[in-house]
Amino acid sequence: MADGESEYVPSAGKWPVDPQQDVPISKDRVWVDGCFDFSHHGHAGAMLQARQLGKELLVGIHSDEAIMEHKGPTVMTLQERVAAVDACRWSSLPVPYAPYVTSLPWISHYGCQYVVHGDDITSDSNGEDCYRFVKNAGRFLVVKRTPGISTTDLVGRMLLCTRTHFIKSLMATIAGQEGSGSDAERKEAGVAMLQRIKDYATDETGLSPGPEVWSWKGADAGASVEQQFENGGVFSKVVEGKGPKSGQQVVYVDGGFDLFSSGHIEFLRQVTIAAEKGEYAKNWHSDEARDQRIKEHGADYGPVYLIAGVHDDQVINYWKGVNYPIMNIFERGLCVLQCRYVHAVVFSAPFVPSKPYLSRLPYGIPSAVYHGPTSFMPLTSDPYTAPREMGIFKEIGVHAFQGVNAGEIVQRILRSRQMYEERQRVKGVKGTAEEAVRRREHLEEEAEQVQKERAG
Image 1: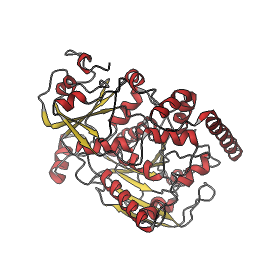
Image 2 (image 1 turned 120 degrees about the vertical axis):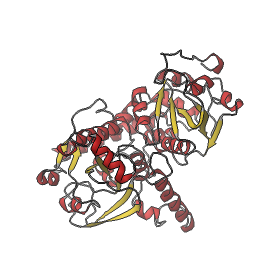
Image 3 (image 1 turned 180 degrees about the vertical axis):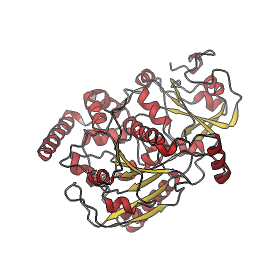
Image 4 (image 1 turned 30 degrees about the vertical axis):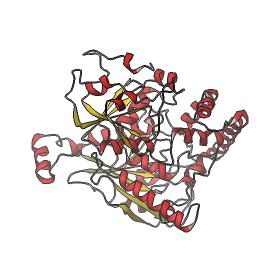
């Protein structure tokens, strides 16, 4: 409903998530809300800034029906959007079915003194400010909107099939050696990118060091499995963070992680669960073991240290064609970095995790290399031959969000293209028209044929 004063306020026992009784209001408890549709690093950036203002961050997530009424169609379901918010390291509690017009009774029930939002204006279906009630109550704080990314931008890339977002070399771009603009502009942009990576490489407080960040430069750069046998290469540390602690099992995963969503998140969660069930961890949760970890490190921690390798843009585009990846390596890396299941990120990870590469990982050969069943990138040969031969390869089975990947998200938008055209028009984006959409469909068909030829 557009009128915040007539917004539904649940009674005790009817709130979407616990607690069911009112919580004392505290300045340490902060609220943000939004759609969080195919959650990107801009959403994570908003949560990071909000988390830095308090000690707990509650995240209200609007229902599919409310978003349709006020804004237009969602790409992801409510369940998928809740999974994305829940996986963000800085989110303390996702609250589904939060009202589109931010409601004082809702934030007060969950004990939040302040609502935090970016410096852009969000309006309801009547054109009124969604935050008018909390603003009038003096309970509204403003943070800067994350530049360079939005759901509208990503939908535009899908419909227009642009490739201008691709990055040839992330480290060269950060160094100001690649990119558009003058030398001074490239250097300034590179400094800003590195700072963003450092910001996202923080712990759950958003204030202290968290995941470590590395980059890999292989001696044999190539996109295909046939080309990419990494016989040499070096790791470079990008951001100093927290390495593995005593007793933690180091595991490795890799992928494109394009349009980072519930499919990727559930895979990472399942890896964590599987690794925690290992023989070595059977006594991990005993009182004696927990007390010893707290004594040695000042706090308890989990038994798994997960490293995620992120492939370059050209690697993904080689296999998927069209203008995949929709997000470039910088954007995809930030999405992975903000995920609570990830403890270290390797930018420009090779498509083939060979024995020389795995042996050179900063923490030594991992105890396991995990992968899930992949249908999005059909391959001509197995890139995980080395981990199999080393006896460390493990698979994650089918899960609830198995089919949610970049290709599926693009197809959802194409199937509802008229609604998304209208959503783009309302946002002030020039319409792509039927011709542009047909071009996307044609390029997808061509890419599928190339994949079949390679697989054959």
